[in-house]
Image (cartoon, rainbow, N blue to C red; front, side, top):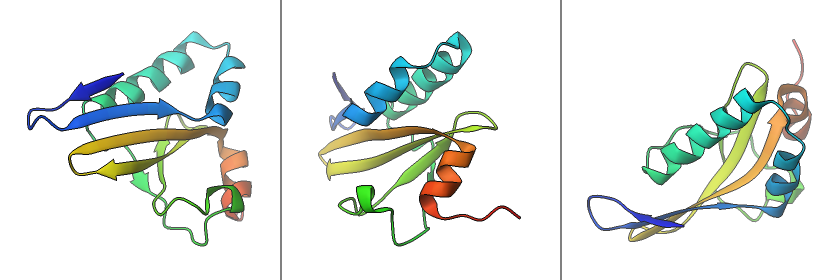
Length: 111
C-alpha cells in the first residue's frame, strides 16, 4: 500500500520473501503487534531504527547500500533498507531476527 506524506511524497512499505516466511512462524500476538507498530512508523515516514554501520554487510545484504535495524524488544531485531528517490520512498523489510542470530549474521562477538 502506498501512503503520501504532507509533502505529497509516496511512501511504501514492502516485505521481503524471507521476512514473510519468518513472520508466519511467530505465534506471540504481542510480538506481532510490536512489529506492526514499527511498520506503521515507516508508513508515517518516521525513521524508527538505527543505521547498521558494521561493514562489510553480510553476503545476502551486499546489494543494499544502507541497512537499518529496529530493536523490537530486548531480544528481537528487524532489519530493513530504504530504496527509491526523495519523491518516492520505499521501506523494504528484509528480516526478523533474534539477538543471537543478528550478532552471528553481522559478526558481533559476545563480550
